Image: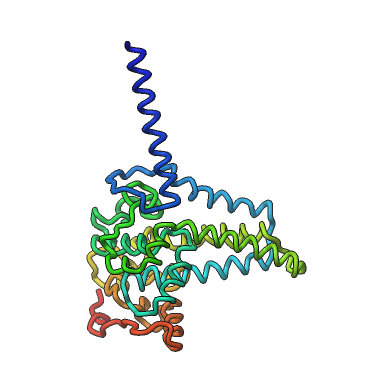
Length: 318
């Protein structure tokens, strides 16, 4: 009887474990299958693709390097960084300007290609960050530890679900809901496009010295991983390193180097002083590439109603 009981328990535990793995794999393909959870442990099955992205960068020692592949990597970094900072952050999260539905979808798709989840997931968690900034409910406050704020927070079970209640006004766009649910589709498409581009370059422009695998590794994997960690520094470092011009209720800092790396996001204390502004570099010398590019888009009518910084707020310095 004891043996039968142990065998039954073992089978039950094994079945539950397999069910959990299968559920997690299902979430890879349909992120809206993620359930509400209070579990802060890292979901290692879910983390597997994230680890693979990093390991794939080691393939540079196999495929080599060429100027063409590096230029593609830099271009994809810049394009996707702008999609994250201008649209995932300033548009979807803070509604700091207005644009048309086609442009909204285009840059949502470019943001999704950065493999930082869908636009609704990103905006929902960021809005929650501002509501509870550096408090216990803030998922990625450095007060919980550097590595947790840098990457641990989005790898745990608690934060897998898209908090749709935070982004109700965006749910009326089925194309955004689709991008958010099936957030692996666009990255896979970009990876295939990189492979195809490199293959065509090898066939029709052999003098460039590149090929499909090389453009795939540099243009997709290396570019994406650098983009990951540049973006993550705003959570982990911009609340620790830099100066505080304004007396906010959190630890946000202004950091010139991070601002260069992230197209203006490093002026984080400014941003927390007035999150609704399309401009985060409040002074002329605070370089904010995202703002400059949005001004260029506004000049040709692609975006409009850019929200500025009220003069009364600029003066209240620490």
